[in-house]
Length: 254
Image (cartoon, rainbow, N blue to C red; front, top):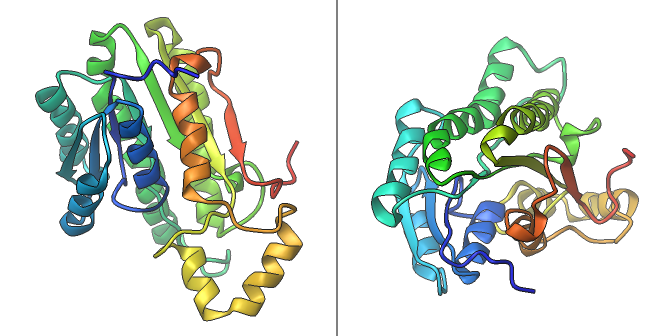
């Protein structure tokens, strides 16, 4: 299937590793010119150098939790590739694991890792997307934004991202800017939280997988990236405002 992505320009935040890197790499493979961004230069340079083409890859070191960082990545798309068609908001992070351990400062930190970067980069991207006559904004949320799971602040932040995507989808449809969220389940990749937990307590994690994931294994970053790549393409133009779950049957929500 031709996804009709060749020649498009994308920004993928948090793309030096994990799900973000897999999405950015898959888009480059489909002919998209992609701005990779992250706070760490070394991992970012490695990700950009490994991107296979035929699209082009460009790296920008930026902290998109700040207004300056958000504007910098969007400006890079315009100055390097001439515009912007696709934005994938992938930056995230967790906090306290229980309500007793969560206070206002912890919640503010978790929202600052997830919701505010997505808001800031989306707002920075709007003029560039409107100049193209429309575009796509994808939020990488979590199944734990749709149901209980993870720490309480993480739950709140991911639910907020899903809600924000729905609100944006309704408001921006008039500009032909299509917005949606993707909710991955537990996904294993080197250096990620599940990788660390598996190394620390392999028996407990094996029991978790058997109990919680009907498919019997963790998801992979490539499985998430393949879904996101289809959804940002012109083959998915009627997917607007929803949250698409990619979790091997892990979640229990309808």
